[in-house]
Length: 216
Image (tube, rainbow, N blue to C red; front, side, top):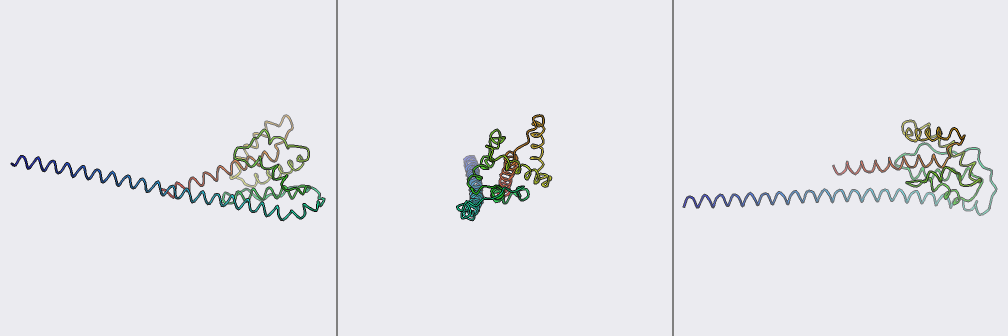
């Protein structure tokens, strides 16, 4: 009888241990599911924020186009500016606003009232993976002067950016040295592509870091 009771007790203890292990496994699974849901919710929030920033840039560009539409329709003759004025190095929080300001600055400096024409001309330099071979040429005689002035303006803000512009400054120095023998300078759209590519990468790294921090 005693032996049977001992065996029964051992069997009962084993059943309790197995039940506890099952409960712990379920709790761990619920915890992991909760973390995954939290991460997904945070990711959705940052995606919405990024899309809002993109939409803001589009709206600002549309406003600039609307503001100059009356002047464009009148075909007013303008003189090309001696230089292009561009705001300082782009900040990660308003990189798309900076992009819009570059388009406006180039248009304002040109002697052409066609805003869409200059927006399209700059577009290849503002892609995530720009074609640098394409950008090594101004794309036509009518763009050469503006391209040269854009190059000067962007080199100026790179020099003023110091640490923030270090990577682009190094790329620019290497490219300039490689072309030194042919006396061919680096085009404005090429430099713009370098700045945009580095700034876009830093922005994505910042968003990733924010996601990691929020889910830690």
